[in-house]
Length: 85
Picture 1 (tube, rainbow, N blue to C red):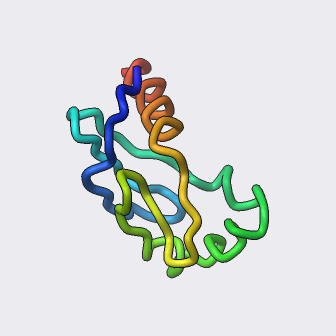
Picture 2: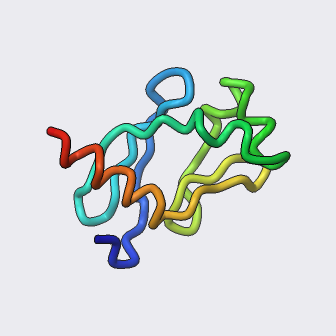
């Protein structure tokens, strides 16, 4: 359960995948390809060079054009991924 946790580090893996680490130690890979067709703000992310230029800002992953994904969404995705293993 997300308790206002912040993303601390990100590392681009390949394609549209980032390895994300939260401040409480939850970590794992997230495939962001599902966001590429979610509206004009995500359109530039189709370019892998632009996609890989993401950074951590205000506790979540953010791209140079201001696109971001809510940290609670990322946290929930990682909880699901980690339960599979």
